[in-house]
Image (tube, rainbow over all chains, first blue to last red; front, side, top):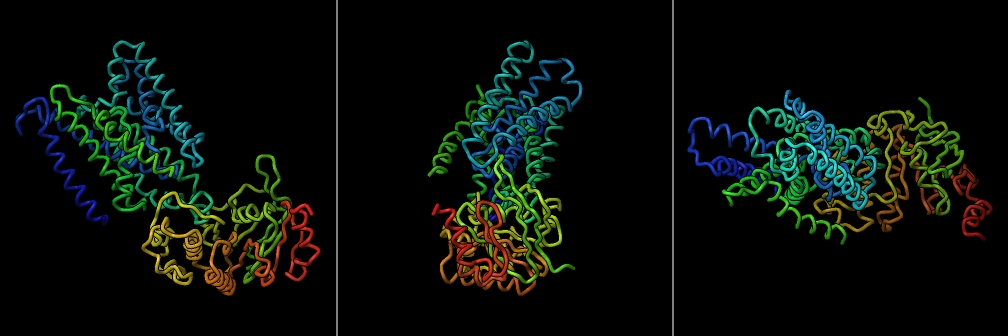
Length: 313
Length: 233
């Protein structure tokens, strides 16, 4: 498939999906019927688009920097770190956490950057086992930390549990979502220029340096921006695994592995996947909607197993 | 401008407490081809990586006008190209993608054709044999060195996996770079090739056993000492 066709199909699909997402839901709002539509569905659709975009491109960047097709910010513990950061803030001072729009995103970023840095220090080296085992450990630790805080703080308990299940999209309001949405877009825009460095890195560190790539700087930038993308997306959705895995795989299957093509297409596909998952979750069982994370896990987990199998053959 | 393109003085590499390269001094001038030979495990690959500035080292080092350990990688790459013994790729690129990644598609296509790989441009790397993949990476390395005069070309066993026709093409490429004013350092097991070079560096157990013109450095006594020591004879 050529890049033009992939983009054309993707944009048409996304446009249709946006219209569908705006019209599907439990409440029956007509188009243009006062505030409820704009207040309830539009922020949710915008949040899903921004988070999906950040998850898709973040996954592609993480796979690129670890040279590993199984990397995904959900599986490698970066989302866990972001949620843990939010939990720590809510646990320490539940009242002041909401006073400024940037408090929650900053806490998420601190947590995500912490796990992302640990992952780069301990888990890199090329082997899937090392990367995923480190991610497993980070995930377990941050999940336990989040659980401990949630169990001890009455008012934040439900909020954090919903976050762990990737069920925050429903809370999206323009007041809460504008900053994380901007940060998602910012992280994606800043990741795009790393395309050539990530291409060079795929030939190994020696070759990348040999061709003039600054391996250390590429790695630092990718770690920082993946953490930013994951943190901003977590603020909007909570923890969602597999989008960062699925989107780059689909992108590579469509346009080949060049990062100049994979990074932007992963962003588009991530937005389609997350908005699609959220719309399915809300539309199919409208009385008891499923979270976007539940839908992506049902679709993503079998794919992950398939990729892991194929990777070892 | 100095004639010397690659100059190492007392170069040493220590990894995990093991001295892999110990006090190696060598020089390569513009237009010279220097062969690095020695038994398996002598440190040829480590020495080449050290010369390319890819390893932490002690000692003095100048390559293509810069100390590759302190200069920024992009500047360094303008006067130094390096091709590993076994190049790898995490993703299954098309052969033609490599030219775009290295930033000179035309030069790369030219080198592909010279290495008899022109017909493979649209294939994926995974569809190529090991030797053909190595050829594509060599073409990428050659294309990266757009200004050969006064530059360093560092190749780790460039011909080892190649068929006879491509071995000859690689040899011609090395000579062409030398003719254009580059200094080429080539690790090899092929002593016939080494005898045709301007200078030979014989390594054994990380140390310089002999260096100089092929006739002086590749005497039967030195060959017996280098390879005999490794085989335990």
